[in-house]
Image 1 (tube, rainbow, N blue to C red):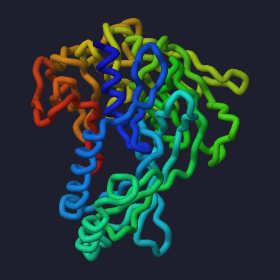
Image 2 (image 1 turned 45 degrees about the vertical axis):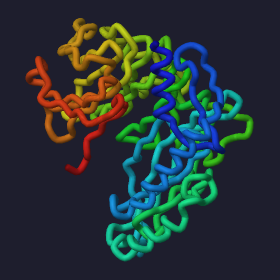
Image 3 (image 1 turned 120 degrees about the horizontal axis):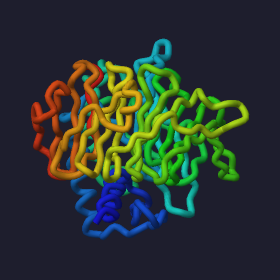
Image 4 (image 1 turned 120 degrees about the vertical axis):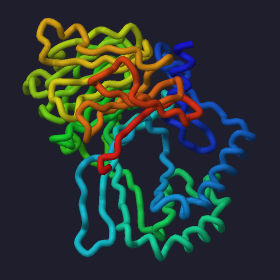
Length: 378
């Protein structure tokens, strides 16, 4: 049951069209192999029809939609903090951190993509033209509105937006998750299909990967026994990172402890209180020594790094959902507030001052909640 559920999760996280096929992990725990499976013609037809209806209405639903068909699915996506505004341009340039989830025979990559985002004032005069173009382009190459592999489309901004992958770094196996260090965005940690966490400095790698496929991270973080997805950098302490895995462990490292002659780092501490797979971990946005973890045991654990000998026990613990808890996020504006998402199809709103019950429950999803995020602006 666990293997089937996690394989299903991989499919949803990495759902991406690729030459009429989809790549899925058949066994996300032990077999470590990937297969390409044919999508049923009827299912593909329904998907395409629904996509065309959505695409036709995007100018009326959103201020901006930019799409790009990736060659392979990506299990991870994160905005990098830097923003560039070229002189005299009506757009800004931002970057995305992506990964690949290929078949067993194909090379995987950690990727950086540049996104050209139009200024908001560009939209008004373009919306009607985009709606007409979307209707004309309903049945183009690639099956979904003319956006075959490697192409991009923009709705609502007259085609000004654009997405380009500008850097590829060889990676051993698929990238389960990739996160950049907030104080040093070029420092990127990745969760791999092995137990190790890799750390790359993107500035020390070429834009195009070496053809030999060699994966050369700057560091390997040891401590886990199995792969996983949970990964979070401290917003307060440079180089401090935590990771959760399928081994039910949370590992905590300081990457600055590495030396020039030793490219592996052991954890400063290992936390163990979960009884099942840990799905996600996150540092608190306001309290430098606090982080949280959630997992398939339905538990939300809150930890304090200052607890000394008591660090083996959470400072707070609650059964947060009736099914597996997949994700959590602390509020950037309210010190005591966080949210959790679960396989029970709900999002839980929690106040750390009273974890005996939820502050609120959001119940609009039709399937399990895999990720939650707070708006950084509101």
